[in-house]
Image (tube, rainbow, N blue to C red):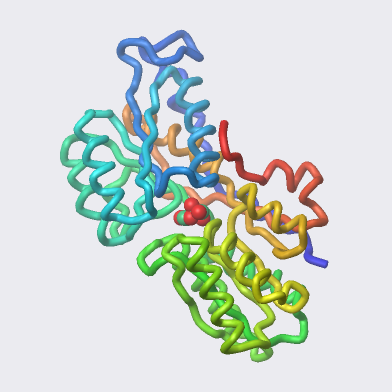
Length: 326
Ligand code: T6T
């Protein structure tokens, strides 16, 4: 059985910014009148339960502070899609932008261009090669989450064997760090063989193909670590299509509705649920602190919860699940 593990966040909560941020937007809890701070959120991709959950919390936090928040995301998790979205947001002149950059290098310049216009930037979830352009960067303990995923695989497949990583694409700070945390831990345990990382480009169908092809090549794979929601959805489909649910243990990052279904039906054994709500809430707090010339925390790390069939219906598991709408 997998030990339930919750890593508590090392978040330095700044109890600043909210009341001061109300400005003329309201006497606490207004919906953002004239003079209210205007914030924008650029998601990594639209329609992803992780960013939806983040947006729900960010909207509530903005509303409570009397600020306005508009949210947009590209159709794909891809810098060539995200750059024009960011540029159009910049041209609408918000005072601060929360953004999950889709690539550590390709998004550096477009984000710097936003800051050159006097817009404060807060990185949420993913980061940049040089995050110093941002007032604050808030992310999960991604490397630690990758290591925790291997701990889960070890409990599920204790005799060792071949393990595969299905990730998104190189250059995504979060999923690269998760793969690294996982692979470093695999390499330190001689009972397991690392089959390396394959990239799904955030498409469940591609992840499914990767897993079915990998199982043809190595029919004795014991574990798959899928580094995000869409890779995990597809990996589950791939194992199901190969009819190997009893043999292959899947641990996936994130806890979207489809993943929870796969957990309940036994295709997936554990989910590393992040705290997207907390990331969104902190993102708003830090943006408002930056706008109000109050102290800002440059780097904030949030935790995760391992969700299994054993705790999915307990309060700890339930509160960790993502939403598909607010
Ligand atoms: O895993 C999250 C996020 O943390 C990552 O940066 C990209 O993928 C997700 O949005 C899930 O789809």
